Length: 139
Image (cartoon, rainbow, N blue to C red; front, top):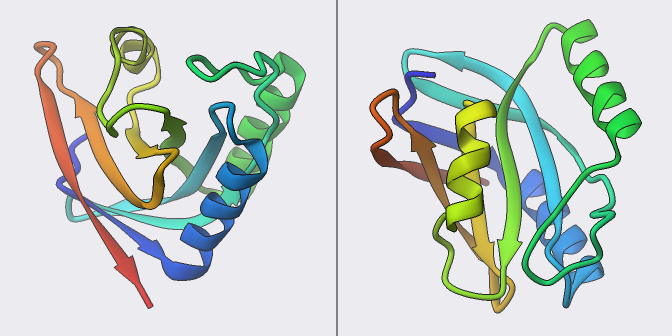
């Protein structure tokens, strides 16, 4: 995925924040679909599955739910542009995140549970380098 920036409409950010608050103190997880054009990811829809780990440090989406989300994204002609989740620590990828970023090559948006309004975006590049992706909130 060749992306420098993600544009996230404010109403989608609000949905992510509400899901994060509802999931607290555990990590929340959301999936964001949309499209990519000219190295910019445009977020159009948010999915808010349950974190079946019920953990403050990990997340897992139930496999059937994950399949349903991927199927809907494909049927709607969109792509998975980002996976969003919260951390109890600063919003940067953990070692576990980096391993999962290898098999989920999309933007990873991470927010601190203390400040979910300020997500940071990351991509794992081909050579294993971590690239920060600019996050723009559209009013």
